[in-house]
Image 1 (cartoon, rainbow, N blue to C red):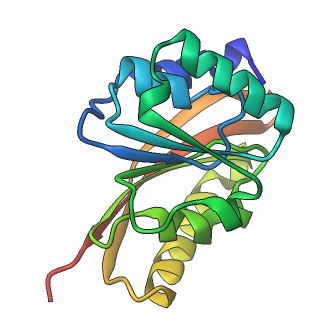
Image 2 (image 1 turned 180 degrees about the vertical axis):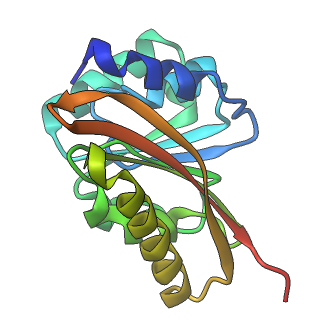
Image 3 (image 1 turned 180 degrees about the horizontal axis):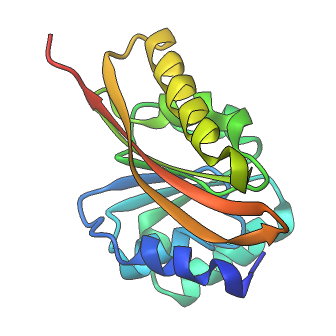
Length: 181
């Protein structure tokens, strides 16, 4: 679950100011992003979704060792079933090669006024533009189907590392915000 190549993204998430944020980490694992959100970014609270029992046990130990267990609830099982709805300022979707199967879950986790999605994906270098368009169109469509009137835009693209020849690990920070009217 740990890769030196992903360290820059772990550090980037930890450098955010999340002291007033509730975060849903849909693929928490042993705490790869959950811990930086809690320890470095000072998140108000994190819901950590994970279905691997070994990872859940390691996550529990890591939360205790870092003295942040009181600001995290672990939700065991499939995040499409266990993730909370309507609570998040941010949702982390750190699954490769794609987290698309949980995009609906992520939109549902955001508060009614919206928030930020951190969507990871492995993308062919020649298809980065079309992938970003796909993300925007998909999240916009999901939000509409859930009854939200949001403007959806990509605020940042992080090119984390080369995953394989011509395949790049990307993270798009997708801002979802309520439109006027």
